[in-house]
Image (cartoon, rainbow, N blue to C red; front, side):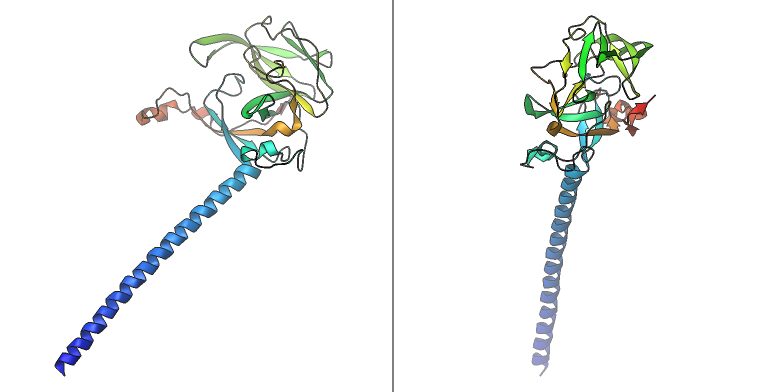
Length: 273
């Protein structure tokens, strides 16, 4: 009788152990499943935000100084001008034209696909609207045969992309409609300071960099030229991070000193005089 009781007791203990181990396995599988589900949801949400709301970009060149610096990281709003295949990640839209299309305003800073190579993203300011004439004469901008007023601020210096610095004159330019913004000019006699008169075609825009003598933009017709409405990806809205790039990838102890704290969370909305 004692042997039977002992045997039954042993069986009961083993059953309890097996049950506990099975429960742990079930809990482990459940935890893995919940983690995988969370990851999938997070990825889908990120894709939705990136596709329809906001997408991050970084500034690699000095073509938009003083308003955008190399090392600025910004968000563009994808909904500002509606959606085209070029505003979709990797051009997956597979359609022509724009859905919920809305025209940009003169003075907007826009990320767009380079017309000569749609694999490349550019960022410039809208200067010319469809039907406008644009011309540079002795460094001065003319829109529809009217000179665009500018006010001198003073001499500035900025760091070039590769090495050295450049001395420039800063001006406050006022576009038709009242949008004001800063521009840099090294001189009024550079290669892009005297141009033909451009007429912006229907459904296209004329883009220019704020660093007027160091910007490959719509004035360079064989590379940029007139930018089609469909190529617009979104409007620059906010600088969320900025670094001067003086620290290497593994020099993490230097990272805090490279951050341009005064540029964090700066908005890029157009200002009117």
